Structures are given as structure tokens and as C-alpha cells.
Image (cartoon, rainbow, N blue to C red; front, side, top):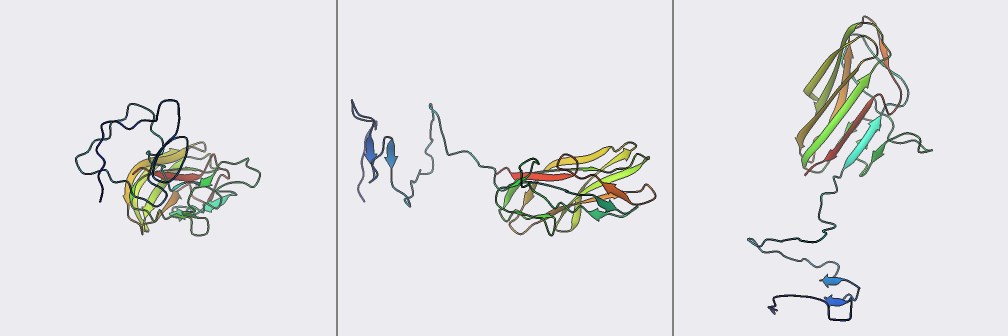
Length: 199
């Protein structure tokens, strides 16, 4: 293996092209597609300019919501059926960068280990006074609960950071005890589940 020892690598005077590797472009290239550029242990990369392409892309990321009403039975925890991620005309917010949210099982399955920011909100059509709960479930077990006293279509919500393995999944339950079934409101601005990868 050959070694090149220099103090500075720069473009030649009067040109904007320097080539390291086999691709001739208007920038300084190190290697070509498929190569690995190794930074040894103990080496510090000091940046005094603009760095691009190094930041986390926060994927997978998703925003799912309930399109259409759904009944939440009295005093019964019910999985929210988030059945939409976007509208065909683009009028409703929603996205799923890596297709990790399943609108048939209503689950977010990251498949990528790491820490995730997750948030959800619930709204019913009820104007009566009763308890209203939202639950984040991991692999079918509740791990976070939030509660409010609903009096006039109040919202219940949460946000948190949680670690996930590649085979974990998350979904949302709602519960209300108004004395009868209540519908949750339809629309991306009311009942939604969203999240993205942090690291």
C-alpha cells in the first residue's frame, strides 16, 4: 500500500478542478463510488467551512392520521385505526419516508435500531365531562399513558423519546368513560401519530 504525505491539498492556481481518484469533477474528490474513506481512531475532523451530507437524515419518519370517524367504546381501550398518511390531492398532511407505518395494522415498525421521537394526539366528538386517556404501546404493552378530563372536545396527547430495536412496533390506544361510545374526529389535525429517528 502506497502512502502520500502532504501538509495541504488544494486546487492548482487558475483551475477549479482537482482529482483524487478517477472522477474528474469541479470539486476535490477522494475515491470513487464504492470506496471506503477511513478516518483512523484518534483523528479529529475540524470543519471551518460548510459541511453537507454528514447530518442525520432522521429516517424513518412518518405522520399517520385517522381519515373518517372511529368509535371508541365506553370504558374500553381501543387501538386507533390510523388509516391515512396523505391525500391524493395533497390537501392533507401525512408522510411515511420508508413505508414503516402500516395502515392495515395501524403500527409503526421502525426496523432500524435507535432512539425515536414519538408523539400522538386524540380528540373525540364528546362535549360531556369524562376521563379521556391515550396510551403508547410497544409490542402490545402500554408504556406511556396520558389523561385529561374531557369537557368540550378536549385533546389528549403525549410526546417522548424511546429506544427501539429492529423488531419493535408501536401503536396507540384511546379510552373514554363518558357512559357510551364516542367517535374520534376525522382529519390529520385531530387524531394523529407521528415520529422520526433521532440517532
